[in-house]
Length: 190
Image (cartoon, rainbow, N blue to C red; front, side, top):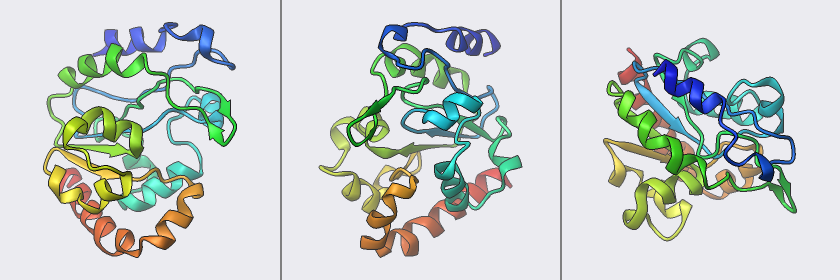
């Protein structure tokens, strides 16, 4: 695993496409119990090198019901984005994750994390990639039907503050999805 993580951290596969250059962000061990597959690091995370070190990370930790120490213990939680580097800025926010990363690295990483009990698929990119044909037509439908993907996957929207409007429109998310998520996380990390 150490060798693989080193290869990922030194990857330059899509350097020519990245406005701020390469800085692959990942945290994982072969003992990781939960794998969080998100979108891609944002500008803040690109600078700090710490995954989920922003408001989205604060929201995610709140959703999971865990503190930073538990979250950043890679034996507990692997943090593995669809795109390992910050993809840059587009017209309405960050660009999508680079398409090279997941096919190049994910299968190799998952093969090393044999203790994993649950994979969180955060956002549409992770859900489309991993759910494939069993994915519903929209992210909202995926999240509403989260139980259909258990026990392997738990699907979530992105925890960005930009999604507060989505959460306000879908009160069932806080009432039904988050309590089950916290229960699953607590049971795995106990």
